[in-house]
Amino acid sequence: MAGRHRNTAEPRASTLIILVMTLVIVAVVIRAGSDIRHTAHGIDTMNDDAYYYIVVARNLATTGEMTFDGISRTNGYHPLWFWLQVVMFRAGAAGLSIADQALAVVLLQWCVLGVAFSLFLGWVYRHRIELPVVATASLLGVILLAYPKHLSPFTMGMESALFMPLLPLLLLLVQRSRWNWAGLVALLLVMSRLDTLVYVVFPITLYAAFKGRFSIGSVVKKGLAVGGPALVGVVVMMVSYHLIFGHPIPIHGVLRSTFPSINLQPNLFTQPIAFAKGVGNPGRLAMFHLPTALVILPLCGLALLKERHLRRPERNVALLVVLLGLIQLGGFLLFQEWVKPISGWYLAPLMIFSSGAVGAATANLLGNRLTLFLCLFLALVVTGLSGMREYRRRHVLVPHSKLHALVKSRPPEAIWAATDCGNIAFRTGAAFINLDGLINGFEYQDALKRLDLRGYLERAGADYLIVNVWETEPAIGKIEPMYTHKLDPALYRGEYDTYDFFVYTYMYHCYSDTIRLRRDQEVWRSGPERDGIISVRAVVFDLTG
Image 1 (cartoon, rainbow, N blue to C red):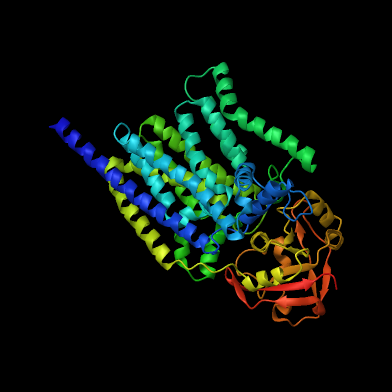
Image 2 (image 1 turned 90 degrees about the vertical axis):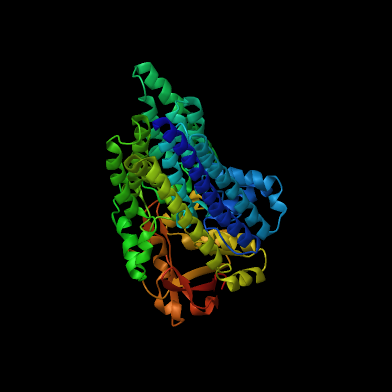
């Protein structure tokens, strides 16, 4: 009777897994179709920073120069996602219209994510019989990642899309002791985002080195196989960058991270709570953010300490995932440069680790049957929410579309300066000097240190400056030093004689000189729009007057 019961239960579980997998596929296809359809109609679906990648990759493919503004060379990108786009533009995307170029990037992104979900679900289907609890735990993790709010950081047009296949694949290869393949995937992961060398690849390399029978030779061999390619790749990249750009570290790495210097920022863990209170929407606390991970990762770790339904080898990998998530949290707490909330795509690895930890902990506590029913329930919820999101989704046409029209109306040789200018530079085709410094060269940072912002803009031939000015101070947290110039109620209302513009260098931790702009230099201003929870206007100044 026991054998007969087991034989009938396994097909039922297998059928249930297939049903849940089908629901996940439907949810992901709904989201992919929505992004592709909206992008095809000229509606923006990517983050502003994604267009930094696109513009630099297009310029390199068409002109041979790594430049965003056409003036200074830049290495402000993570290599793998950047070079995938360069290949795409060299293959013919550069000849497409602006709208179709954006669509090509979205299609590239969803090809990567499609491969990721296919690998996830294929592994679950293949192991649903011989490793049922592990397969169910993995399926629960996939469902959590398919939740629309959780999927968003992977669909912003950023390098985060590459984490979806690479991170789980690296862990799987290490678990199976495929050291050489793990080393190759670790190299690709680091080239996807450089800080994963410290926060992900190094801990995984230590785990791999001491996995199994211990001997000095074995530890060295496994460590070199897993971590060696990534380390060599980073060294080669740094030498190349030093020869090409005069600095071994990418500009965004210098400006976004303080590693190895500690910059303690516990406020990053309280900002989501303050923001939810500020907008009067407690439901936002249900979204994934740093406090969420801070709570669930230790709880998952405790749930995995005792063997219940997961065997020791699988629990060891799950505990490694918990540890990697905690290391990510520590990195945000100790080494984050900017004081504003963490960008969504930066949370992508933490989201993968947290989803995997929840799946493993739940399966270990509840076993296969109860976890499968939980998977079915959540899959129905996720699919329903994906359908509702698509039905209710209302993308706004590119912000400041009148501003875009103004830029296009000026001579094509005009040079503009602004912070956060990826989208407008891409959509208009105009030359934009990026003033927040993430996508230009180190000479700009040196100019800010010398209090020579005005001179830098004059030498670059800047004709116009765009300022997005706030009416009031944000109600949560500190104002980012780079954006202090945005807070000017008099400029917002148009009740000013002069306006002082300045920026901040995170490389040297000081403010630039001040450019005093007169009222008669203002050539255009937008109506009030929303920037998160505060009101903002775009104001354009003529720098040649």
